[in-house]
Image (cartoon, rainbow, N blue to C red; front, side):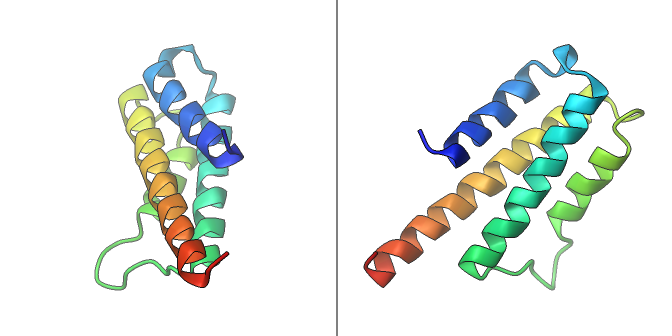
Length: 101
């Protein structure tokens, strides 16, 4: 598996076992997810939409309030981050095929 696929799996697993994680682990995963999404957007040239709120900001907000955020919200944020990373990975793969790499 690729590093990205491994990280997506880690986010999904963490969301499903959210009660077993420390606040530090939850925050670390969300912060890494935000960084991965931003780097993925830069790589494929995808900017956040101007007509709707940037979901990455919501992920950052959850990470910043991890001590008081309910586990359900944190788990949902992790699943949303995993989905965003998966989508960016597919976009990157399409771009590589288009460029002939």
